[in-house]
Length: 281
Image 1 (cartoon, rainbow, N blue to C red):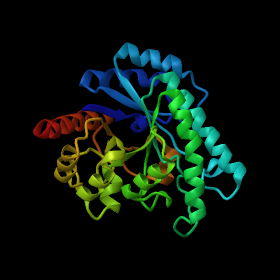
Image 2 (spheres, one colour; image 1 turned 135 degrees about the horizontal axis):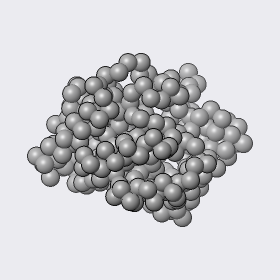
Image 3 (cartoon, one colour; image 1 turned 90 degrees about the vertical axis):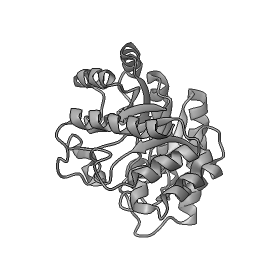
Image 4 (cartoon, rainbow, N blue to C red; image 1 turned 135 degrees about the vertical axis):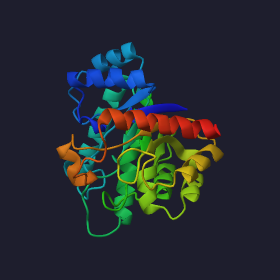
């Protein structure tokens, strides 16, 4: 098992102020970090070298918006979505990211007032196929992420993600599991994990209030027990949110600080994951 920390707790863009944070996370014992890639103009090769020097592996996360929505009825907008995701994959290759996760299957926070249509589903699958091909060329695995119904409407359950990835039908298109979204959308945690196990490549460990995992109401024993049962042995990545990202407030709905400090959250989260894994694996 590998233990990581999503950097969205601190920033939406890599910058020099993150160097002490990265050093601290390495000192705590994290194996790697999840990099936000929203700005594709940064020197990601240089960041890859810095992370190599620190001994931190990495994955990455990105999103799509209304202007490059892969399920838009406008072909030109769908094409922008494909191109944008390909650009992010180029950045992943430059920085050495193993996996690209996130809701880049459709626009974050954009709603039609109904569930996905057959056309939107088809557009999503068709848009993801060239992205998966490019991922293969870049040596990156896609970890497609479902989100709860308050953040998106194309993929809301892990069964949705598994079906979507099966229809894309490319070895580099897989999916991730997220304890926060599962806590909202799944009737059975065990059933959700078992149902997507063969497509699973990544796990987000996230509390029901997006704060310190292990200090809320997520059914942790059931999550860890079932991940062990299905033989999962990949990244467990802490995903928590604070007040550092005003551009994501509309999607994450984080209005208040729910932890002592980012350092406290990161340290306690790692100890929690390590203890739960040690009980089972």
